[in-house]
Length: 187
Ligand SMILES: [Zn+2]
Ligand SMILES: [Zn+2]
Image (cartoon, rainbow, N blue to C red; front, top):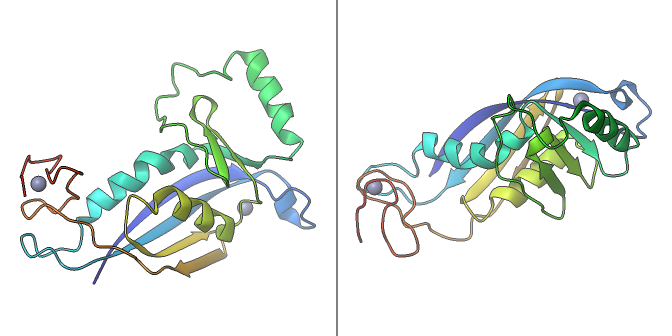
């Protein structure tokens, strides 16, 4: 069975080199849906608590929220960094508190200090699904990711390859020692 969670991401981007209005910088509220598949953990009668899926995903994905997402070869990138530098906000500002952990994958690098994500490919809805799967595939048994942004939407199914051992008392994943990080249950 599947547990499903949805979260919103507000971001600015553009399609560099695209012959259409999306070549101009603009913003969206994107809606990301993550479906996680596993057996039902009998203790809690759930696949996985949805708020925990959301928490796990948000920890990484908050780097995309209220962020600017630019392709690595976009000439706006050095131009914007120059302005941030001159303003003294490139390496952070006291009001920038919603920082996720910096990450670097083959597809994207997050710079949480200045709310920027640099991508290898154009950040279309399809591109975002690839990035999200790459970031979360080792943390969640992802069966499907759907991302919509304005009139654009895309979806991709995956074959979840394993069963995650979960706590029979609160449903979250047990750590490598078989202990629940939330309630302390031991297998
Ligand atoms: Zn757009
Ligand atoms: Zn527990």
